[in-house]
Amino acid sequence: MDGNGRWAEERRRPRLFGHKAGVESVREIVETASEIGIGVLTLYAFSTENWNRPAGEVSGLMGLLKSYLQSELRTMVRNGIRLQCLGEQDRLPEDVGAVLRQTIADTRSCQGMVLNLALSYGGRSEMVLAVRELARKCREGILDWRALSEASISDHLFTAGQPDPDLLIRTGGEHRLSNFLLWQSSYAELYFTETRWPDFRKQQFLEAIATFHLRQRRFGRTGAQVQEG
Ligand code: IPE
Ligand code: MG
Image (cartoon, rainbow, N blue to C red; front, side):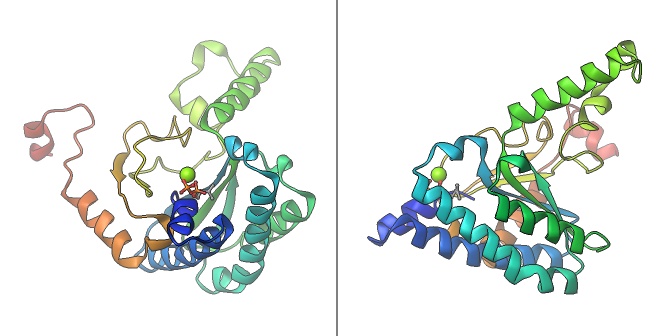
């Protein structure tokens, strides 16, 4: 979800104004995704690198996150949305962490879409944590290093048990992954748009999904093989 700051600056308003507008996009995209039957939606809300932003912006974002969770709980439960967090939750301010844990607990039995919030998330740091855990399990004899597989790595990421993403959308005009789901996105279709996040609404989202459906996913095979099925 990129482009909030520039959206605000283009309107000669403070960056936080853009983040607030971005929350409206979040509501709309979550609702749309759940409506159209998406299984898992992941929103990259805050990266490990975002901790380096000015303290005022970081605390503004944390405040928005907390109020978003508090105001959305009822809607999530009503729509069967199960909240998960990807990232280093212990780095979040105590009050935000508490609301997050509570919301995750309160939506635990929801059976609809999984909503992953990537918070204090970084793809490389996620892999380091996974490797440490695998190393410990091998050392303690819980796992055999010779049997380590791609699945072993997937199972030790924050997304353990979830399918890999099919479509990765980046708004705001930059053409990079910025440390997002590096392992999981190996075969994701990438979709980049100039649209700033606060302007990315239902119509833009459906447009991205329509584009996705036009792509031929070959997973290394030839086009002819894919058509044969
Ligand atoms: C939102 O957009 C991303 C968050 C960290 C919440 P930005 O704040 O990165 O906006 P730009 O890139 O400065 O426009
Ligand atoms: Mg940005």
